[in-house]
Amino acid sequence: MTVVLTRDGVLSAEALAAVRAADAVYSTVPTDGLEPAPNVDKLLTGSVVLLTASVTDPSAAAMIAAGSRVIEVPVQGSAPALVEAVAVMDRLRSPGGCPWDAAQTHESLRQYLVEETYELLDAIETGDRAALREELGDVLLQVLFHARVAAEDPADPFDVDDVARDLVGKLVGRHPNVFAGADRVHTAEHQELKWEELKQAEKRRQSIVDGVALGQPAVALAGKLGQRSGRAGIPLDLFPGGTSAAEQLFRIAATARRAGVDPEGELRAVAKSFAADLRAAEDAARLAGVEPSALEADGWRRFWPSRPS
Image (cartoon, rainbow, N blue to C red; front, side, top):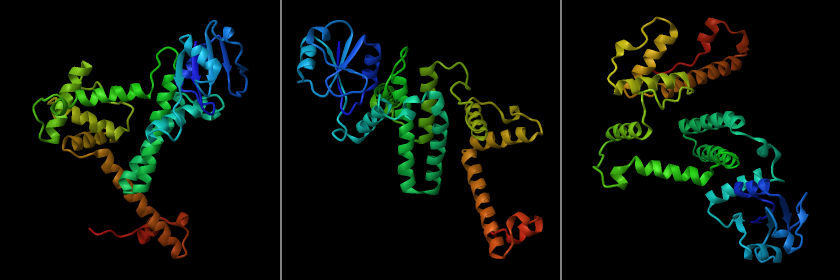
């Protein structure tokens, strides 16, 4: 038997799981598709869930007195903003919430996670503080969304608290110099080496390639492999030695990362600069009464912006 203290029809993942598993679900508040609470004897028989707005409701009180579990939904606006964000996500996924949100899965959300991450990256690169704040919220939404979906998994559920708990354990475990009285780490480079040692032992990695996200952008992937192989002492002459464009790009990106340069970020900066030049040339052509689509090589050179050498 379970009493769900609900507000405005919001159900947490735990409450939703209880509702789905129950033999009967009743409600002391008007709820579409649910029967009103019956007599107490019927409430205390079998796997029953009661939705109620107050634990002082007679039906709820009787069930609680009989040992029923109580699941409570936080009051929106009465909790810290981060907790409230979780409550809002709960409402969106609850019956009567948003049909689109309720239909999403980990797989269907992948594209949005990638898009929001790149939009955050763009806000960082442009130095737009308002956009940075907004895009951090959009990335946080993806974390809350995936955690809520995970909490509804019937075989292996976990929620945002489990995610946060694992994160705290990881942060503490990987900073023994801060939390466990280990030897102090005085430089960022030394800290990175210690992290690699800790991760190697923690994850029991069998290869220096283990843990490298092979689905990341190709330039970033090449750079990461260059960095990892450099730490292992693999010489540059063992990099792909062909003359194809791809092999040459790999060598450039991997070697750059070994030298402490972020090839993905640097290449993106050059590409964005080129895009700005292209837009400036189009604008200059239009100001001169020339349609950019009609330009040929010499025309593009004429309107291309000059940059200090």
